Amino acid sequence: MSVKKDASGRRFVQAEVEVPGTPEEVWQAIATGPGVSSWFVPTEAREDGTVVSHFGPGMDAVATQTAWDPPRRFAAEGELAPNGPTMATEWIVEARSGGTCIVRVVHSLFASSDDWDDALDSIEAGWPDYFQILKLYLMHFRGQQCANLQVTGFAPEPASKAWEVLTRSLGLENAAPGERRSTPAGTPRLAGLVELTGQLGHPHQLLLRLDEPMSGIIHLFALSMCGQVCVVIRLYLYGSAAPAAVSHAEPQWQALMNRLFPALAIPGSAG
Image (cartoon, rainbow, N blue to C red; front, side, top):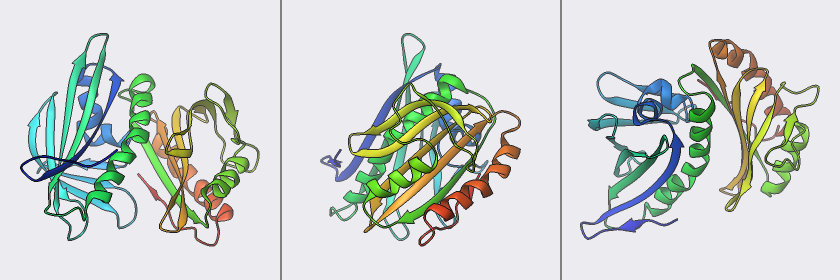
């Protein structure tokens, strides 16, 4: 992964994924507020063209729509960071044979130095995880109502230790793709199929497709940053009962995070 540059001075990164669905179905997932909220973070697409993504308390990303060509392409612009340069983001959907589409996202900015290259690299590095969730959503839960939550805690390094604490407490230690796992008594109830475990560059993560207590996806990971470890649990539940289920589950997950990582635990957010 690296920032690319062209003769105009544009600096950009991009990521893409092949997903199941028609262009119209994929468009609903990546270009509408309810669709994006079903695999990314809670997102609002307002009538005035403003798009707001809620990453957590005080962590809203705001962009303004600049192009709209359904179901093929849309673009938006917003600040890369407070007082940072403007970043343009373009989404492209390309149909493939066999009922799939390529989804490509390109982030671009104009800068005379490499001061913002690390931020662009970080954005690029985050897409593979979210794209895995997008693929699962389109394959198994396409078009269903979704409610999600995220709880976050912090722990001392190393990340391997925090990951061991988290997975052992949830009965998910040494999980392998294709296994069915469930959480033990005394923790929020979950059961489902392991879809993904750690990958190159991001070894401490786990993705499960849930069937208990209802249909959903859970993504857990531990990542070193700024001298400490960020531990995150993202839960997506699908169906008409999802909002009530998330409201019930959020305090349980936050209590678990606070218990496992008490010294540095911080409040989470729900959508």
